[in-house]
Length: 57
Image 1 (cartoon, rainbow, N blue to C red):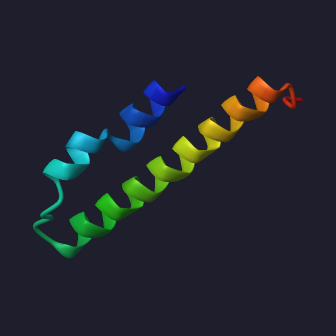
Image 2: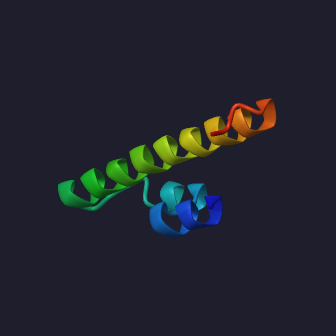
C-alpha cells in the first residue's frame, strides 16, 4: 500500500524538487499532496501498529 501512496502523492525527493513552485496554483497543489501523503503515512503506520498489537478487526 505505501507504494500506492508514493505513486499518487509523490515521494519526498519529488516534493523537494518542487519546493519552489512557479505559481500559486502549483504551490497549493504541492501543499495538498504533502498533506495527503502525511495523512496516508499516518494511517498506514497506525494500521501496522494495530495489527502488531493484535487489535486489528
